[in-house]
Image (cartoon, rainbow, N blue to C red; front, top):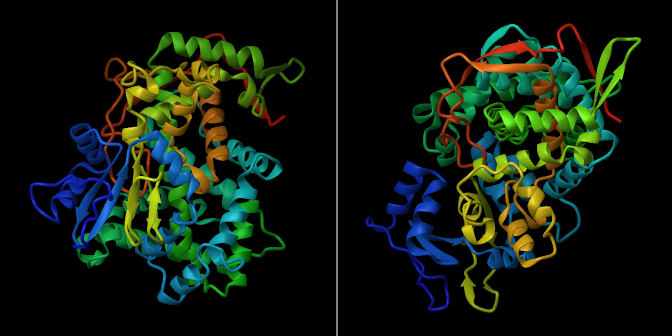
Length: 485
């Protein structure tokens, strides 16, 4: 164990030296940081794990300091360190990924992929095309008269529709959607064990097999892809072009795409589920959001007898829906932002962080801090972010903005945040305008979350909710469609 300097963050000990914190993280997941932080009440502290250290940051001021030092406290090294364990790509591809990782000598694979991802998912035509394609597919799932398990229904719909929007027709989830959806969630379920990378075929057989099958399916997809006739998104085309430029084999392209699926699906699906549940379980909130949507975002065509939902209008006009989604992420995003210390640094002229160690900024701690969110921090308050919008330039507003980290922060802010937000709001609006949902087994109860992967932020529910989906009274027989503008 490296010697601990006097000006390093104080050590929080465990009952079992060197492995106690590992056991805690294995048992509790990222909630372990909440347990330790509540006990020690420090702005930053050190966990000694095997022969390394993890610096855990819980202070808003120190999070800002980490964000300001993104060259030294960097996210990209984790792509190299964990990427191979997550996707299982080969050593030659690892060398390509690691080359010029932080862009000091011009472009590298990671920096090019990141730049193209940001531009493809920024507000604009590419984002609108993806959202439109997703909603066209989703309309096939929005039908009344079904009794469904709500999370399972959201999972199937969003997986199939999002992958069609991003990869176009004839992608792996088009071919055998039920099987491929299950394979992705088998992979996600075993991800923690796959990351440890200790005999995955023995200790995570379902996840390892699912990863291989998903990778092989995307390998075939890339081998059969004709860029001149392709109907994928700007995002998938950019990735295919960059992969070809760097000489990645189709086998490795398939493996890398399995990792991309985590970003597309693993957080989005539970977030949409919890947004629906929070709204549907609160009759007053449901009524207010419906009225907001009907006032600002519906356009009726009498000749066609069709109600059109104006998708892009929602971002500006449906403030209660947007605030509700932000609050869902505050309450249910429980993961952690991570950085690698590339060289020794004194953080905020006080704390020494040593080269080669890890910085963690746990969302669960930030999102449950009364000093940032007030005394009602443990309650779901759908209008919380409306109130914060009015105090943006105050100390309270700035503290909450920094403490809010479902998409990370600083140089590694999630490039998919615009697509996820628009997708979640659009799916939810389409559902609640058209349908009522009644729990089959009694009243609404918000299910607790179960952590399955340390690599994701919004965890799935411990139990599903079986609901009867009924056509909304007064809207029987109405045709529905949408327009982006």
